Amino acid sequence: MSILKVARLGHPVLRQKCHSIDPKTITGPDIQRLIRDMFQTMGDYNGVGLAAPQVHQPVRLVIAGGQEDEDGRPLFRVLINPEITVLNEKERLGMYEGCLSVPGLRGWVERPDTISVKAYNEKGQKQEFALEGFPAVVLQHECDHLDGILFVDRIEDMTRFAFDEEAARYLDLAGEEDNEEEAEE
Image (tube, rainbow, N blue to C red):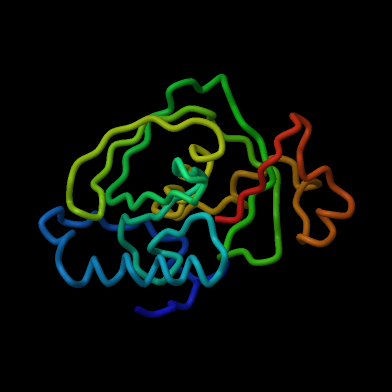
């Protein structure tokens, strides 16, 4: 396993639309190695999610967290060729998001609160499920990367975009809606 270099804002790989992964190759050594390396990289950077283009691989693969298992341990999903459907556009969740590819900065982003997801898992099995709240925000953030979109593109009020230290000092990181979560994807 390897810790991979994370692409930062400005690198062209972050603005590419990623290629789908052939489902027949998911269980092969190349994709399985990429998944293991992405987990190791995400752990080393203390991320809650990671998309393949962030580690210079323009393919439709993300790891997304934001949930816990029954024992309170972080739960992460590997999603290959994910497709998201917004279930309720009117219900939105806003929070200060951060990104491993935009280190040290955070900005207020509002996203749909409830989504449906179709994807392949790391075993090449099709899966379909719904997410709401923080896990839905994390997954939307990661899937944006697959289409060359960064959270900074979704900030509507640039007065709510700041370096981490200044945001903690001067901005209400819990947000107007008293959200208690901060995203560092």
